[in-house]
Length: 140
Image (cartoon, rainbow, N blue to C red; front, side, top):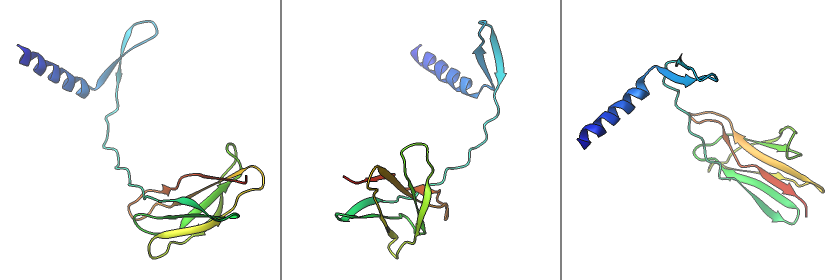
């Protein structure tokens, strides 16, 4: 008895997932049928590269934004913006990677306020466009 209930529930769930119509209630409480488009196989999402990024303080007034592109290599584009919200990212550098896929660029902090930096590697070699984290610089 219990096995037949389980089998009935599994078949009902399977059929509910395969049915081409969905039932939805309207504001008046009436029931209407809507046709669903046939789902095509979505293209596989490309994997992203790991950027292994960090900001390092070399001395009191020197900051370096650096990282390693994994896997692969390629130019890393560095962008900066001057405010937290409402302003655009501006390209400040295009940095090449060395033989170990490492990159580095000197960045700066404003006397007052804060600046934000990020980097990315464009899509190539079967990988999607990959981003670093967003780093905030400021002066104490």
